[in-house]
Image 1 (cartoon, one colour):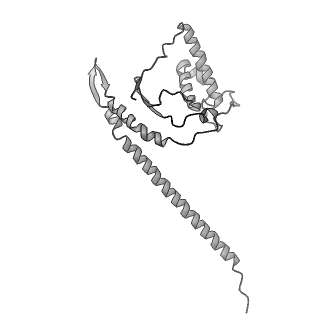
Image 2: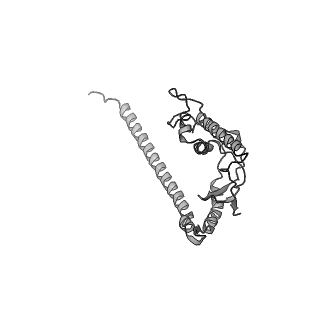
Image 3: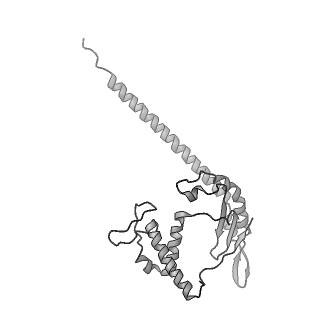
Amino acid sequence: MQPQPPQKKSKTGLIIVLILIGGLICLLAMITIGYFLIRNLTTRAQSSLPSLFESVATEAPALDGEATFDTKPLEATIEALLPEATLESLLPLATYIPELARVEPDRFAIAIATVDGAVYAVGDAEVRFTIQSVSKPLTYAAALEAAGETAVRRRIGVEPTGDAFNAITLSPNTGMPLNPMVNAGAIAATTRRTRRYTSRMRDSGGSCSSIRNRSVNRIR
């Protein structure tokens, strides 16, 4: 009578299959939990703004032949949102940049600017804070407005790059920054904006007509 072959390999294969099945079950559970969390947050956000745009777009009586809009629903909505949004914002501070690490974590504000220049704000809207790389698209837009697209495109490219946000690199083909969203392009955009602004200030005798003070409607 011949001896039975060892069962070690078959047991090892069974263990691997069980581990894979367990991992798949855990993955499905995580996906399901994530789906319901996102769905819950989306539902809360939608219920918080039930009629914001509809109510703001309610036309009020015209003044001097121009349509005006009732802003009271907008003011009431963002004021009601402030306490809930403040609780949601209490997350750990970023510590890899000193300016971000020094921010007071309980500061929070909501501000909305309309196309006609009105600004409505609640919370700590008047507290200055660092916006870091968020300034890059704003600086690029200011450079485009000040110098024109043709002039800016001669100095800053618009090609995608896999470089980090703080990269100081130039295109090997053109010698220009690849785009304005990395530091090299942002510095070039700032230079274009600064030169144009200085020239306009000098030509206008120290004032620039495009720089206007905006009044902020403090709700509370």
